[in-house]
Image: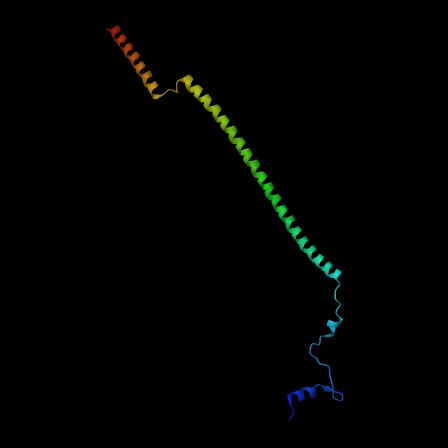
Length: 142
């Protein structure tokens, strides 16, 4: 019968009871041979990474700038269109005002621009004249 300590010691012994190296904490050979980058290389890698990020951001900003230019051009075209429409409406309004003035003047000269009371008075005056002519005719016949 052996104790667990003895079994552990016996399993570790190599060549005449000399303990072998412990495999605890052993790293692979690649880790020992791996080259540690210098501080300059680390800074260079960080710079390149940051440079790529900034290049992407610049590209996004240029694309946004292009879209904003297109939007500005569209707004300018719409403003010009509105201005032309306004000028056309003002010309039409001026033409209508001129036509209205001419119409009012012609109505005045022809007598069509009278109110209903003025027409009633004129009709009464014409009836009075007609009655006088009628009496004068009847007297001439008699």
